[in-house]
Length: 339
Image (cartoon, rainbow, N blue to C red; front, top):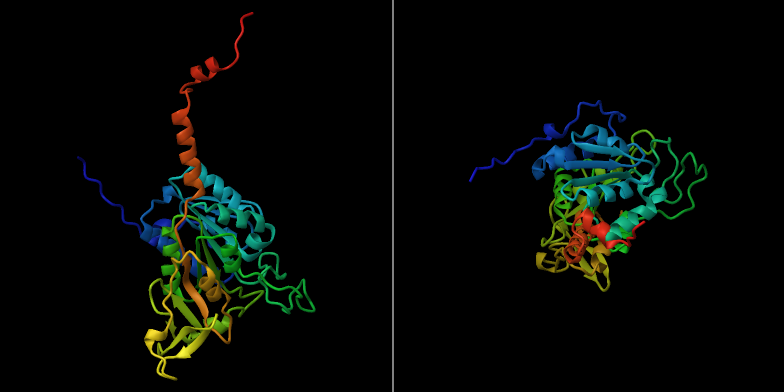
């Protein structure tokens, strides 16, 4: 038997020769760099990798990856990514989308791709603004925020991407912050290894039209006290001194300090990303500043059948049962007459 050598890739193998055309200091750069590192760690060849996007600043990303890419039209990335995966099940498919592209014009495609559990990896860049079209409010813009299309402040409640994902019966949801590279790589790698639709909300900064949207989290001096990086099977502990944690207070989450009021590490909740019941996972998604830390990492990761496997298996079963095996068999099965 011939020995096969495992190809080891580096991030450089996934970098295209195209100049990256984002504004200097845009948060999208960090996500691109992490994605290339994750692709290398997965060990999947660039020729087995496809990156699909819609319209928006983030949707330029396929040009910067060495592999197959398709820059589609506004909001339709999910539909094209579905077709790519079903037609080519061996490909690792990434969908790159923004909060406007995904949750506004692409909202219907998004929820149904999640519901069907297609084996694709969705990176949802959330800067809470329309950046490419120069600063209009998006479906995730905070209520009351003044933008070019809401000069007196928005009057709408924003979407929570994680809530929509779980509402569509999603099997994987994670969240990362552009400046927290270690947890970003961990989260994105877990998403890639998940079988089914993985959705990762990427909190990124738009330095031109919404600078500082996530500044409460991104400030290095206080970041560890304001985020909690969740890992399955580990205690929900956070803070610069690793002395803060989450407990249940009735039906609600509560932040406590270990060592105060008799609280010990044993009292802190253990994260269960594998739990099919999403109740506690939703509570983690709902956490907002300043009362709570913002949850990063893998929040939900459960097993379920995938749409693409279902289609492939169904076709194989029908082919096995069918008496028609060749084109001649098909012709012979049709009504025939002589002239």
